[in-house]
Image 1 (cartoon, one colour):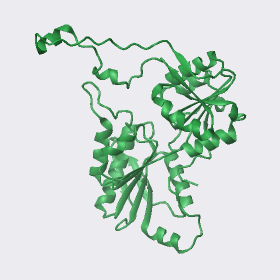
Image 2 (image 1 turned 180 degrees about the vertical axis):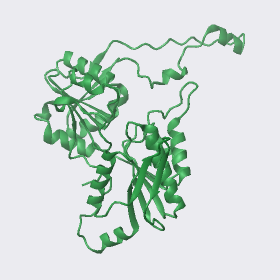
Image 3 (image 1 turned 30 degrees about the vertical axis):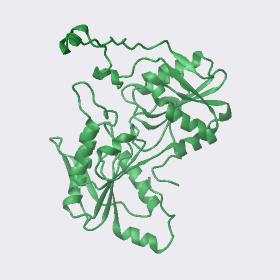
Image 4 (image 1 turned 120 degrees about the vertical axis):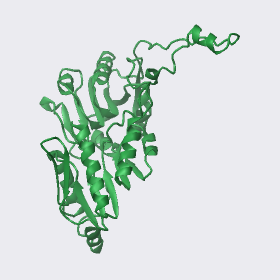
Length: 346
């Protein structure tokens, strides 16, 4: 996620080495591997730190070198145990703050709880809570990648760099998908149309949008704001007040806006977690004549039995970035890790 000069450019690297410390905040081996790759690209050594769990499940962080007056970069990828991951990051940030670090930059490619960024009925905006906790702990800058909603940046009172993985995904499409000129970029819902349009314009391909799918759980409908008011509640406002009754929303039958017959369908999104919507989209595209279906996303969470479901589905390949540890992998290479997609910019 850093654009840096190549190794051996002279005195600039010596300055960087003197004032920069790179830590991995996660005890997960996958995070350590990613951190080492970033350190190699920067030409620096990993900072010495111990992150582990006590027998009573408390997180303990021990920084084993001085960070006084230095710029500290803390790399944290979200593992399956999300809450432990958050505590590891918060405790390490606070430890660097109390050790008089000059600045503390969090490198969190996948921002946890990013789907909970809207108000729900009797719920809360958890992303805002997490942002406040990170800033309170001492974070001075956040570097992340493909936030679920851009508005999350406004939850922080520190600078936020929301980087994009699309250049690498576009490169992968051009180099690894045969006959990609016969492809069409697909948005599995109208909410994903803007992302699909961006990919289609850069690749000079057509776009298709699937409309009428089952209602997503994160829709605004769940907070009740669009429910039609009852006659009793209207009368309670004022006896003479007449408010027209709203017609409740209903999803129309599934339709595909755009031609996918005899073409390669590439579904693009930011997160692959619960794959039900992707599976339904793939089935619809198959029925409409798409002969090959690819799914591409920045963050591959693949929770629960998602790999097995993908294995049994009409999806030919799932491609994702290596910005978080692989929790599970599909057999027969159906879920592939893009080796060309790094957190470090080329």
